[in-house]
Amino acid sequence: FCYLLSCLVFLFYALFPRGYYDVMGHFDNTFNCSKGTYRYCCGTCQYRFCCEHRRNRLDQESCKNYISPVWADPQAPVSVRLSKKNPTDVH
Image (cartoon, rainbow, N blue to C red; front, side, top):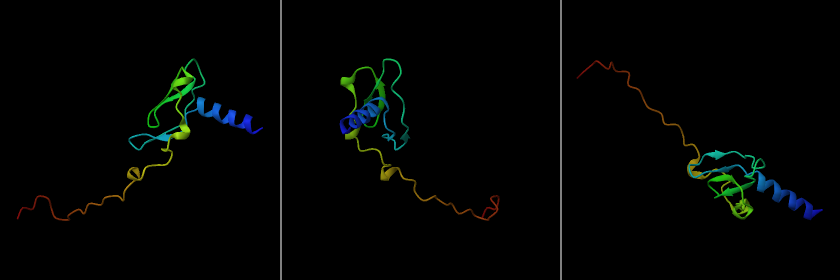
């Protein structure tokens, strides 16, 4: 049973690249590579695409970019204080 389960997990990740954070800190959703001849998830951890040859398959388990990088987290909003002076007033 465990062998079958691990084969199913392998097949799922081979055909469906997991959602991940790219080099710009944007989340790229899971997509399907099970149609046509481009059946495998390939590329790099930061740039994934479907490809034709199993030998080029990306080992997604080795990737570490499934959590938003700290530098990509939104910062506190910047507030600008507006002057109540009349903009046509020149001193």
